[in-house]
Length: 429
Image: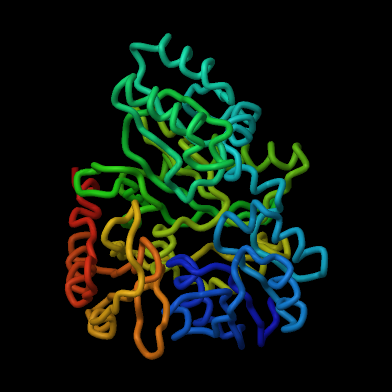
């Protein structure tokens, strides 16, 4: 079905790439895994390569020189920049969408256009690149709560959920006139604010076949009780009890399938992970955003529960042969990930603080520490990013998984480390 002795290149350096490396290293079909550039965690499980995820030329040359059988592209930026196309052009098998299909995440306006064409349920919206027009639009809408989004990539921070008209006006000014996110906010989307619970639906797609993964729920707000600014994600758990099997069928039929078909009609065939960020509203599931890669931190609890050989799944997807795969096997037990962050995140933070207690955390039953913003300084592991670790655990039920994850968190120390204390509490509401 797939060859043995596979040589795999994972591109990226986050918690998502560490869990991908850890999971694929368990495959009997894999002989060697490289991670470019990787982090202190991937350095323990696979071989790190000192090439930035944005250095497309060097990544392609490395894949050719090392006779890579499968390149798995983790983050969104290299996908939007066309890394998958460049790999395919030289005959390297790749898991990750083309530049054209990656616009689904690279441009909020493009994603909204695709949703309109596909008749996918989403919030009403308008796109703007003119400040006065955007301000007038908000001033005319006194009754409706709004969300302001940068059109381009902003590392998960380009969304402002507004409680008041004044907040919406401020967000628009800082994005369009202050260029808060550089080129990413030259154009913005203003949309109605949806109420409900957010869930993340990830699916493996090969252009024809769609295989949904188990559900998960992310926690985007920085602080407990879903307060504070948006982040790239402060924790996640899987499954999300709010998504019933009937609702999942509805999501596949009304959201995933029409989106993939519409992309194909737009000459943007999708091969990779389609991630639908949904709001479960009183009218049913509606799309908040699409991403074109594994969620980080959602990948950690979801892939911890996956029993099927992930290398096999991604290889078959890259070959457009997902139809040959049996149903995915899952551990029924829930899993939960707590993100430990640097002091100051999602604002400015200091790097280079020594992290201790990682081995003790890994010894907690059912727990595994996935590294995100970490680096090696000699023998020491130090913080090297805003979101530093994804402490993940699996347990008999969600309460048990949460207990184990926070028990592991308690073992880990560095100056200024912090995390949310309420990951998964909304599953009980």
